Image (cartoon, rainbow, N blue to C red; front, top):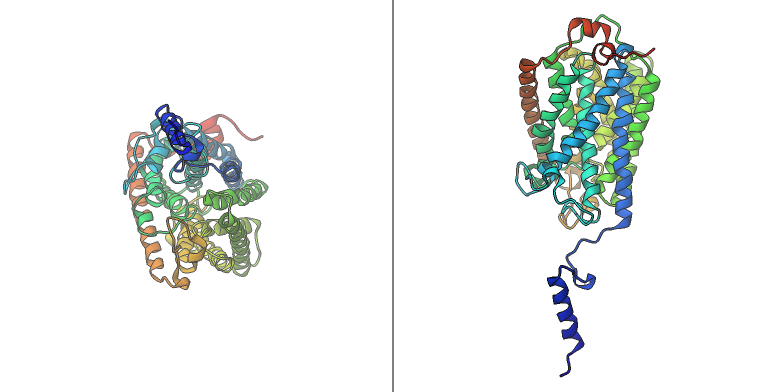
Length: 441
C-alpha cells in the first residue's frame, strides 16, 4: 500500500506531539525569541539597575549632610537587595500574572515554572527571566526614590519594614492596574514607562512619609547645605544615561519605537534642565549646579509616561513645562505648605509625574503606538482625542488617593509597633554613626 508523503508527515508529527516533541514546522503558536530584542532588554535591565546603584545612591548622598552620607547610600543598596528577594518571592507573580482587574495571582510564587523556555504574554520575544528582572529593577528604583523624602531622620529598621509592606500593598497593585492587565490599563490610561506606577507613586509616598515623620531637627534655621555636589552630579548623570534603559527599554523590543523613545527622552531632559536653570536664574540671580541637575531629573520624570507616545515637538514642550513647574513645586509650593521633604521627592517626582501624565494626554500620537493590541494607537488631545486628558486625570487621581491612604496606614501602624524616627541624639550626631557605626573621615 502506498502512503502519501502528506499522511506520513502528519503521522510523524502526531507521534512527536505524543512524546512531547513538537517539530518546529508545526509549532505555529510557539513563541519565537528575538535575539536583538533579548540583547537590548539585557542592556536595558542593567541600565535601569544602574539608576539605583550607583545613580540614586550617589545623587541622594551628595545632597545630604556629611554625617548622613553613608546611611543614605546604605538605604539604596539595602533596598536593592530587599526588593530583589521580595520580587522573586511574590512581587512579580502578583503584578504580572493572571487577568484580574485589581491584582495578579500567585501562580509563579517563588518564580515557579520560570525556565529557559519561559515567555511572558506581555513580552513574547524575550525570555521571561529577562522580562521579570527588567520589571524588578523598576520596583527597586521606585522604592529607593522614597528615601529622599525621609533622609536624615528615619530608622533603618523601620524603613526596611515600610518598603516590604509598601511594595506588596502599593507598588505591586498599581503596577498590575496599569501594566499587568488591570483596570487602569483597560480604561485606557497611558503610562509608557512609569509616570504613575513609579514617579507619582514614589512622590506621594515620600510626601506622606515626610508629613508623618515630621520636620528634621533645626529645619528652617540650621545649615542643611549638600555635603558634596560632585557626587550628586555624578548620580544625576548616571540617572540620565540609565533612563534610556528605563524609557527606550519599555518598548520591550529593539525597534523604531524604542529609538523614538530614546530621542524624546534626551530632548525633554535637556529642555527641562534649561528651563529650571533659567527659572532659578531669574528668581535668584544665579543658576546653580543643584538646580540644573534637579531640572534634568524633572525632565526625565515628566517624559517617562509619554516617551512611547509623543513626537520630538511634544517632548520639547513637556520638558520646558516640567522644569518650570517642578522648580516652583520644590521651592514656592514647598514653602507655602511647610512640609520637610528632604530631597524634594514630591516636588520632582510626584509633580513631574503628574505633569508628564497630563501632557501625555495632550501630545500622544496614535500612529506611534499602533500595535496588535491597539490597532488604532493611543491618541491625545492634539491628535483628535480630547477625552484622553480626562482618562489621564482619572489614572492620576486613583494612584494618588490609593497610594496616599495605604502609605499613611502602613506608616502609622509601624510607628505604633516600632517607631519610625531615630532619637534626637542620633539625629544630631548623624545616622552614619548612630545606625551603622561608621563615619566619613
